[in-house]
Every structure is written in structure tokens, then in C-alpha cells.
Length: 132
Image (cartoon, rainbow, N blue to C red; front, top):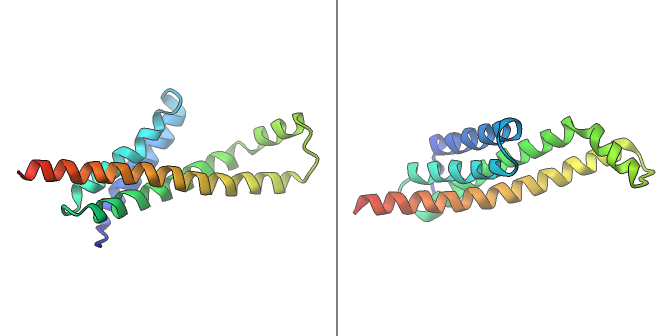
């Protein structure tokens, strides 16, 4: 297992940029292509080992997802509180926002990690096919 910092940086940047841009300008759920593309680039950059493609594609995409979804929850905390008050939530606002941010962090990491992992596998496969 080799960590290729160029591949990790490329996967992270591509994932985070596509995620934030898709939230602003693209249709719903198009941002989920970001971790796949980031992982694909990382998988193509690393040597032809699927384990390296998985690690170098999945981890940076997962971290980008963690940052992206946590940021979205923290930026739109007032909307979360408004929705919670409409359904009868009586607890602390701070506890609600912190709980939502933690849930978003775990969900974002897991979801983006799996998508980045898939992209990393595809990137390694493409590189292997181009060798022959």
C-alpha cells in the first residue's frame, strides 16, 4: 500500500470543488459524481494496484465529503432549527445543530468514501487496460 500525495490531493480537490459547485449551480445530486471523478483520477495516477486505487481514491473523497456535508449543516443550521420546531422539537438548539453536524460528518465520510473507492477502482482498471 502506497500513499501517493499527488493522487490524494487531486482526489480531494476535485471532490470538494465539484461538491461545492454542484450545490450552487448544478441540479440535485449531481455532486455525487465528484467523489467518483476524484477517485478515478487518483486511481489512474497511482500504480496499477487496486489496493492503492482504493486507498488513494476513497480516503480523500471521504474526507472531502465529511468537510462538505458538515459545512452545509453548519451554514444552514437555522433551517434545521426551523424544521425541528415545526415538528415539535423542544430540546436545545445547540444540541440539535451539533447532533446534525456529527451525523452529517459520518454520513458524508461513508457515502463519499464508497463513491471515491468505486472511482479509484475504475481509474486503476482504465490504467490497466491502457497498458496492454
